[in-house]
View 1 (cartoon, rainbow, N blue to C red):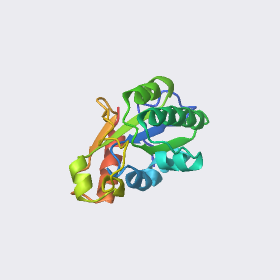
View 2: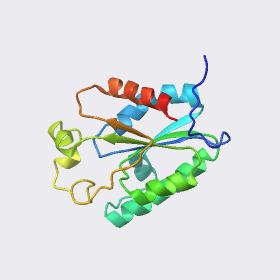
View 3: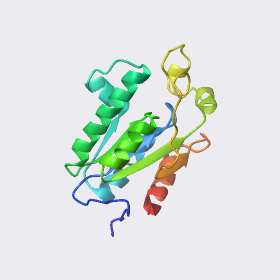
View 4: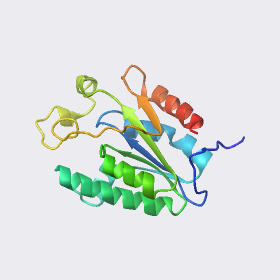
Length: 179
């Protein structure tokens, strides 16, 4: 079978960063796990990471806006280091900051920004994330104003009417069409 060619790949000697962003509970991590076999088969060695994974590994425990931006810059550098070694990353992160996404576009050769668009009301209604049920501070979309992507490579709308496998298949179709 012929491998898919992404026109967005600028440097064949480097991996691809699939930066999957959206509100907490929008389905980023579950969908990235489901598209992983497709990404590996078509683009080579791939790892799955999330902002939560890196927070846990590196004990990044602050949630205020300033710390979140600092951590996003760290994630950017970490992802660049990995993709520079020709390893793809499916990275799921809330990361609703224009500054970081622009940094990724500028500094990471093979950058695919995937925005999982969903409504906070529907996420709360579906009880997708317990954090929205608690009275927590420093939550994107609640008391930290999210900067939603205005020009992502791919936008995938999750209205929670399709299951995650259907959403993953939709995303795969959109990845195939990226020019």
